[in-house]
Image (tube, rainbow, N blue to C red; front, side, top):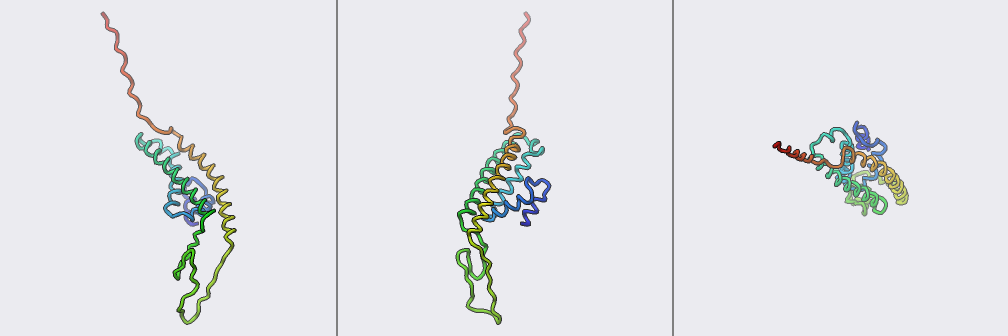
Amino acid sequence: MLAAVALGRIAQSPIHIVEWMLLVIGLTQVPLIAALCVVGWFFFLAWRGSDSFQRLGDLSYNLSQIFLIGLTATALGILLVAVGEGLLGSPEMFITGNGSTSHTLRWFQARSENSLPRPGCVSISIWWYRFFMLAWALWLAAALIRWLRRAWQSFSSGGFFHRKPHAAPPPPPLPAKG
């Protein structure tokens, strides 16, 4: 959540703090590098719509456009995986300690110090998790429509690709005076 607040406070941030927070919540179900790819996609699109991008040379401009196409496909794929993992997969509960995993919870150890530890657990039904992930997926679908509209405007501003200007044909020879 701190990262979402920090991203929202950057002057060139393409989305607001609340949108960053909601996006980060859903992206907890994918690896960190995948989440960073989505964040990079937003900032690359913001740079693409700026004047500094338009001043790139022809080759840099065209290569950046191709990179943006690939990054867009990757980011959309990651968001699709995040929705699928959130709605259909097992939630990542970040359970650690005493040899526990997300599927095996070890409640006790054979040895203890002088005072016995007091175990505790806070739990809710998996259906609450599924409900909130469904709400997140619906929010993401609506937000993605807005984001892709802005992405298309950024992508197409200044032209899709730059071509080298064709050399002007030489002027026709003047008729000989005879």
